[in-house]
Structure formats: C-alpha cells, structure tokens
Length: 444
Image 1 (tube, helix red, strand yellow):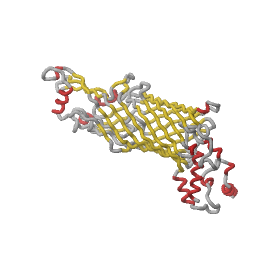
Image 2 (cartoon, one colour):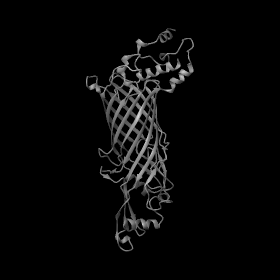
Image 3 (cartoon, helix red, strand yellow):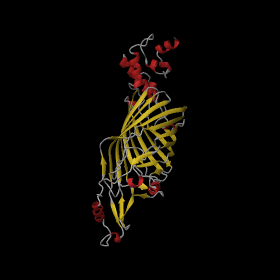
Image 4 (cartoon, rainbow, N blue to C red):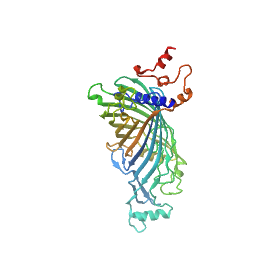
C-alpha cells in the first residue's frame, strides 16, 4: 500500500504543480512537496569584445612590446576565441506553495582558449639590422629571454564551478498576475585562472562575468484573461547583484617572464572590487500547442485536471539589459590599477535568449525537453565580451524527499486514523475528491 500511496501523491503533486493558463513564466514557484531536477548541456563561445564606444574589437587588447632602450618592437594581437562546455544541474523543491528553494551545480566539461596570436611590425630602430621585427624575429628574441610563444589553453578535467543557492517567494498571486522575489547566494566554489599560464580561464562566474555574489530579483508574470491573448505570458524582471571583493594571484614571471610578470609591481595579490550589476528583463511566452485533453494515468482519477497541465509546446523570447558600475583595482602599483580600470569600465549588455520547451505531462510522462539559443552580440553593448551559444536539457518532475520522509515516519498507518492518504500529508485542492479520512480527521 505504501507504493500505491506514493504513486497517488506523485499524481497529485504533478497536477498541483501547474496553473491552468500560466506557463513558461519567470514568477512561477513550486507547490509544497514537488521537486524538479533539471540537467542540461551548455555551450558558450566568445571571440570579440565591445569597446567603450560599442565598437567590436579583438577578444584581448593588443600588447605593445618595447626593447630595453624603449624602441617600439611591435604589437602582439590576440584575436582569440574562448569556448566552454558546461554540464548544468538544477534542483528545486517546493517548501510551501509560495516558497521554493533551489540550487545550481555547474561542472565545466571543457574550457578552451585559442589565442591565434598575430603581430604588427614596429619601429625599424628596434632591430639590430634596422629592419622591422617580423613575427618570427620577435618570438626568437623573446625565447632568448625565457619567454616562449604561448600555446593555446585547454582544460577538460571536469572541474566544478560556482554552486548557486537560491530562494523564490511568491508574495502576490491572482488569476492573471503573479509577483515573486528571488534571491541567490554564489558560494564561490569555482576555481580561478592559473596566474602563470597565458590564456588560462577559471570556472568562477566572477571571472566569466556572468553573475554576482549575491542578488535580488523581482519577477512578474501576466496572462491576459481574453481569448487568443491568453495564449501569451508577459513577464518582467528587475534585479540588483552585488560583488564582494575578489582577489587573485599576480603572475610572477616564472613561466612567462615577458607576459605575466606583474607581481614585482603589484605585490603578490591583485585585489578587485567589481562593479555591481543592475538592470531589467522582459519575456514573452507563447503557447504553440495545448496538446491532448484525454486523461492519462496521471489524471485518470480526476479527468478535469488534464486541462490544468502545461501545454505540450511553448516558446519564449527574453531580452535582458544589464548595466554595471566601474571596477576598482587595489595593488601596490597605481599605474597598473589605472590601466586595469580603464580596460574594465562600466558595462552595458543586451542578452537575447530564445527557448523552445516540450512538456510530456499531457502524455503521462513527467518530463520536459527544452532547447535554448543565447546571444549577446545582436545589440552592441559596452566594455564586455559577448557570448553566443545554446543549451539543451531535460526536466524531471518528482515528489520531494520530504514526502518520502513523512511516509517513512508514519509507516503504514497514522495513529488513530487508519491508513495515510495523500490528503493527510498535503492540503487537498479538489473538494469533490477529498477522502473521508480527511473529513473524519477534521471532525475530530
């Protein structure tokens, strides 16, 4: 009987986890006892940079090289290309109908930087034969000083990133409107870039310029209560994300004496007070196909619930406009700090995300399949490296461990009330289906 009750509990929770007209919104929270586990593959690529004026430039600013007399040898150009493959796992649990707790666990499958180093010739006076340094001439000279030409960077060791802990609280809901507050904490469990390796990239979201250390978002969903228009969900979001001070090791020049030798000037640590993020987002969701209305094993006990399940096929488009304050560097070298702050001025980002989701709940399968395309280059921004990429994944619906724990605690019977029913553990939402055991318990 215990397995039958858990099956009934699962059916009830899946049905409770939906709202008739709302779908693919930003402000959704899970009902008490429902858990979702989402796993996805994420690919991100960036190979350019927006300047302070919004112009597209190389991934890394050119590096001017001078000889010991101060003559201009030439310029190292770094067109570069960075790519990352990430395995992302998200877990969310409905603590109450209004409160949902969540965690995000990223694992970096591969990080790769293709430097594609180029060379622009400089002053002929910098050469002994009064001819401009060629690319080969420069690296031959650099190697005589212990500086080899840097190879591309690649790390495929399956390294963990920053674990994110989050909470969603729905503080207002009506038939057409939902308002939710969302807060998160970045545990900063990822790694930093190797300070002695040219092109090294860490797995922290700070270094990837992706998310703050703590943040608060206000989310809203609106579904128009009119025919045809009720196929849409309109969502808005406002947010503020704060960074605490970060620090990283300065390069000592041990492996790259000409390119990563900041420590003698800056001291062993480079301290950074990053500029906070703030901004807004807007999303439009559209129900493409509602799906079959015939009951499945999930809704056989109450066929009317079939229409409460989410649509089979939905699509949404989201635009995020992010701003940041200036970064502040703190080292022993005022000139280094100034150079870095000039390179890391206030950002403006425009992020587009297009998502297609297929829900199989209407076919009796508690599973969603989704794909997303992401692009930060469609609208020019300022002072950041735009990424493009995609995400494909699965979402599984299940009872949370809380439901199994309660069932284990009570065993096969609840003292004085006979067998436990779903309604004994969770508020029963469907009055005409309320079991007699609930009514008897209420009477007592």
